[in-house]
Amino acid sequence: MSEMTTNHAIAAQIPGEDVPRGERRSYWANVRERLGHDPVTLFFMGVIGAAVGAALLAPWVAPHDPYATSMLARLRPVGTEGHLLGTDELGRDMLSRLIWGARTSLLMGILPVLVALVIGGFLGVIAGFMGGAVNMVVMRIMDVFYAFPSVLLAVAISGTLGGGMGSGLLALTLVFIPSLCRVAETAASQIRGLDFVDAARASGAPVYSIIVTHVVGNVLPPVLIYASSLISVSILLAAGLSFLGLGVSPPTADWGQMLSSLRQGIYMQPLVCALPGLAILIVSLSFNLVSDGLRQAMDIKS
Amino acid sequence: MWIYAAKRVLYAIPIALGVSVICFSLVYLAPGDPIQSLIPPDASAEDIAAIRRLYGFDKPVVFQYFDWLARAVTGDLGISLQSNRPVLDEVTRAFGNTLAIAVAAVILAFVLATFLGTLAAFNLGRPVDKIATSISTLGVSIPNYWMGIVLVILFSVQWRLLPATGMGGQGSDGFNWFEWEQVRYAILPMVTMAMIPLGVVTRSTRSAVADTLSQDYVQLLRAKGLGEGRVVWHALRNALPQMLAVMGLQLGYLIGGSILIETVFNWPGTGLVMSRAILTRDIPLLQGTILILALSFVAINLIVDLLQTLVDPRIKRS
Image (cartoon, rainbow over all chains, first blue to last red; front, side):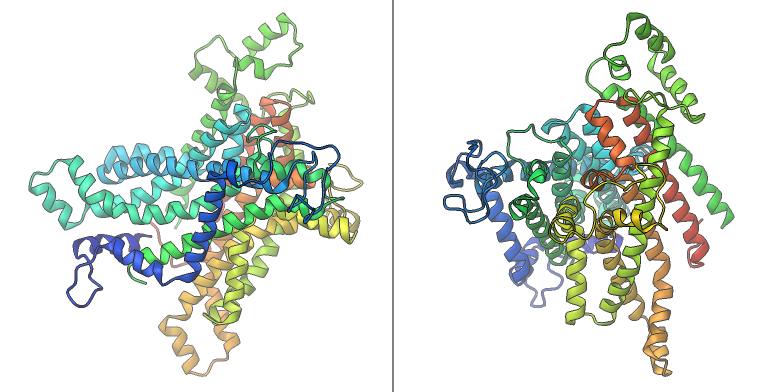
């Protein structure tokens, strides 16, 4: 990580250093071009795009009302007429519930990472750039949260709060802040000692403008790479909380919760009962592979 | 090295204290009057007053914390609201069961991952490497609670080979790895648990071994005609400390995060205790379990760090 950060710092000083014809291109243009040559990453970006699209357009895309129960059509197999992916234990259309479930599952997976990115990134930049006592205090507090395995911390917070979507979001955000803060801190503290920062300081630039113009741009790539790898973890954790009954309350569709309530049906319709987990797997796998692709595209050296 | 070790031990103390502060605050996080979450709903007014005094709820929070800490240090973590038994007893009984499958899972993952990761590193870019990398990506992407359900569908429902849930005739007391009747119950939870460490360790073994292989001395080993078997041994030996550290951390994650898998398999470990405590709003039990699990994670991290300095002479930290 440290090596990478320095590379970004250097890249920022000499933009487009790896473009031979003296042509100046921004770092982000390079990243875009590298991504364009990576079909695997592009494909899985498409998968994520489709999932997000389905979630946003759920009212129009879903073939049935996700809450309409039917006592007569309970646990129908995959491929049933009118119910492409079968029905659940209350006779609700699985495909519609999976589409609506994407809303809560993706929101619970992505939002905590974004919020933690802002808070953790902010704390990390401050701690890393200021150094000294500020750094001490912030980082030692982070160490304490770091001392909890993530599942345990998430369950502890949302379990004590009594579950529900809000407590789940809060719990997951708290889980991700320390590690993001650490990555930002490492990156920021390396920038601190570099010549161009000293130059800015010597020419009288205020701390806040140094942070905004020099530090943030260099801290962003490693923090973004790391955050993108957390989304898959977050989706698994969020669905896990719902699976434990700590997520959204029952009638609302959510993949983790569907997985849990369908467990009673595994003896009758194993395939239908496995579907929500499959959805979680596909999305989490996509985010993991896209994150790997981003890492490669954003790492100047490779 | 001894100075480093002493420093490392000292450093664990404030962390452990911080962990205790968080666990203590959990009672205040719980919705409603904290006293409400500590007593059964049908308690009489005198009981409530007695508990209020006992827990020192009339004193400032800081004093309450130190009182609580003083009791916790002597092993008094309160009484479970559901079972009326000391929290510590409940947790220690369950801890052994969690430890049994977690350690087995880590060993299983370690053996498989070392093999896969080494194989991949020696064949970078070839199909074998692609397969190993895919397995490792799958390991970290798969919702393991779902994988547990799929394994139950296959091995218990379809093929009727292994029991779906529970821990066998012995009930919840003392798991024994030497009795097949009991081991049958542990196989699926163990395999499910091994999935994440398998993914993580395969990846780190692959990169550690590949790193070693790119070094000059490996070229020398090959140049002087050493067989590939010996080269593997050299590469592994150098990658071992790093793998050991990853393993230790994974063991900590498995023990702390066992709740999902134990819920799927109804395995009577600490995770199931937590799950039950959440369901019944048994806050003392929940708090105690979290404290023990978090502290054991701190301890595991400490032990791994110390072991690493012992195993790897290259680490000379000041």
